[in-house]
Image 1 (cartoon, rainbow, N blue to C red):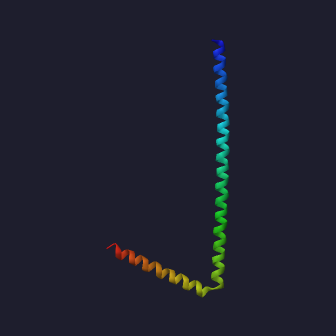
Image 2 (cartoon, rainbow, N blue to C red; image 1 turned 180 degrees about the vertical axis):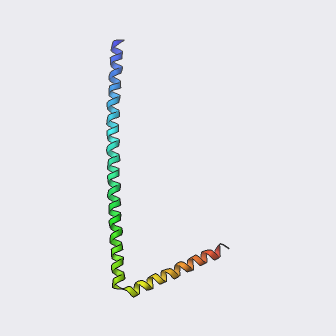
Image 3 (cartoon, rainbow, N blue to C red; image 1 turned 90 degrees about the horizontal axis):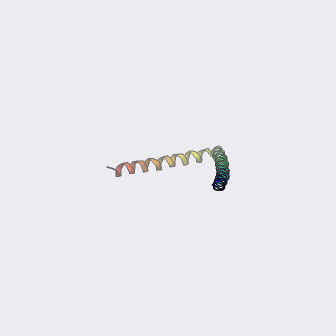
Length: 89
């Protein structure tokens, strides 16, 4: 009976070691995922800032064209909203 108890204890210790390994692997995977998400968010923010800077530069270079584009987009959006509103009735 003493030998069986020692074998069971070794098995429990093995399980605890395996659990510790799995815990470490999961922690590493989560840390990698968090780092990847943060890196992607930073890249997205930089892309958005660059796009906004490009848009500002384009408006400064061609202000009349920019006003025309915004006016046309407003007319299209208004017509689309009116058309959708008429269809619902």
